[in-house]
Amino acid sequence: MPLQLKITGSLLLAALFIACLRGGNNNELDASPTAINKTIPPQTVLVELFTSQGCSSCPPADRVLQRLVDEAEEGNMAVIALSYHVDYWNRLGWTDPYSQAVFSERQRQYAQVLPDHRVYTPQMVIQGQRAHVGSREKEVRATIQHISQQAPTNSLLASLNPAKNNRNSREITYEITGETNTIVLQIALVETALANDVPRGENSGHHLTHTNVVRALTSEINPKSQGTLTIDTSTLGTSSNGKAILFIQDAEQLTVLAAAEVAL
Image 1 (cartoon, rainbow, N blue to C red):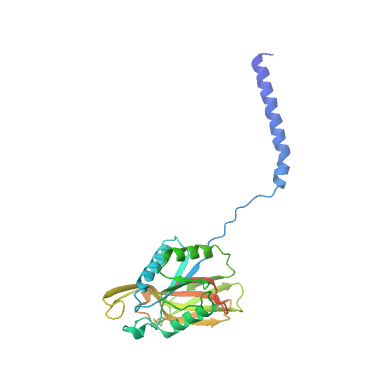
Image 2: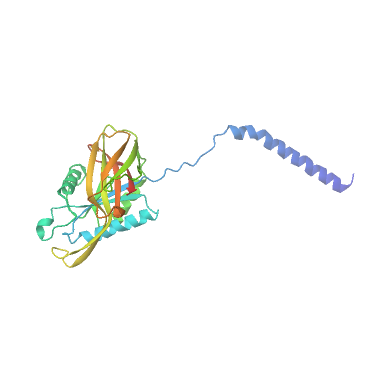
């Protein structure tokens, strides 16, 4: 037999031998569990800023909140933001036009359960778990990053129903998964962008801008797992500047469990 044929035959036998080995290992490979890389998506984090136009330290925190909102809208951060204007600065020369006593009371409720038990402005409460001076952006972002990696215990979905005849109301359908017996469903009606001049007080002469300013806040204790809410939008300047932000909290510890937002 020519040398070339001998070499070819040897190579053929070697190939068949390797194929047999591989075929013999198929059952072993099939029996082994397949490793699946399961990546948990980041949890949406609710950031609540307590601020006031009468406080000279607050505008930097307002700008931090605006940057967080901008990044969330660009899809670079899973954050939903709220801005509450408290009323206890009003006695010092300027009445904040967006302030409400109920927002000051909400901040005092947080002080009862948060570790430092403090009330101050600008205070940024993150997921109802931690509080920071709102202008300390590095600390705020670090806490957001940490909390976003926690596995959520609940989820919340919300959608806007078709418009009804009443132009001052909207219907929102929601659905909650997880425990509902010990939670509170909060519904915040916000204006996404507001600005005005401040003629008196610590920010006298400044033009201030704000994002996601809460204009009304309502609560439902032990809500149903799904339902429809009617939102009164008469407190908004224009509905095109409005948004409804829904979130659920532990009724006692005020930890935020899930959040969702709907443009009006």
